[in-house]
View 1 (cartoon, rainbow, N blue to C red):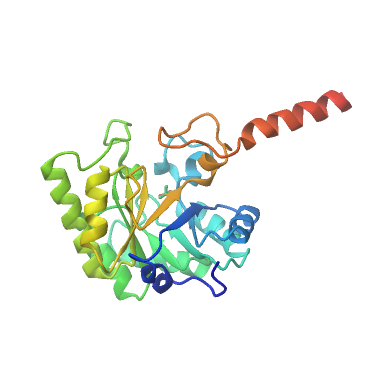
View 2: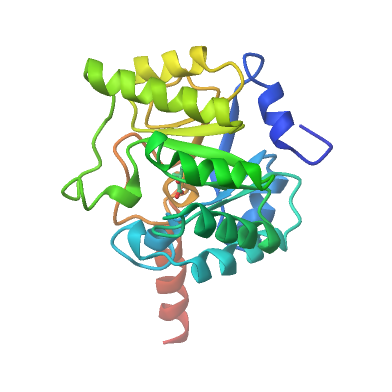
Length: 255
Ligand code: KIV
């Protein structure tokens, strides 16, 4: 386990040498528990819109939501690297992207993550030019799920899709993104991007086992959002069921 605070450089230094895991955290106790478990990267993902705030998808998450949760995670003072998602519409222009990325950093994020490739390059470049650490996000982009008819589909299955992903990944690497989430990317394409981009760590979710790192939504890992579990996840524990059992047992005693 690392003894120093993890930096983007630490994560990049692992490329090709050791695989790593990353998990989402949205509040103080979870950040502290995951940090104590040695998880090196904690992402305050906009998935909080679904698993914490009860929205149907991530498009409802606001900057205020993100700042509130990034502050809570930062209060745990984790050794882990802390990332904050730029939520839907918060990076429509380079100016907006920089202002909101700065606000996430002030709230306690070590890096920010934005969904998309070359179509948002001016915004991503502005973030990097402002000296802010950046993680990309390619493949299935949850903030665009409504445009996709509400379906979370695997990307990169055909040649055009594969080439688009590879070109987007190279563009992010050239900008200086230290890492890039690959979500629901066809595993051979995720593996190819991981090999091709030597200066950027890939972090897969539902994209096979050949990425540099893997990330999961913690609620999925621990069964804390039992009403929906992605196909590629087997919860390690079932805290949702445990909570129901504990509450019902206590009620039976006091009621
Ligand atoms: O919002 C989120 O939690 C994410 C991860 C699943 C990568 O983007």
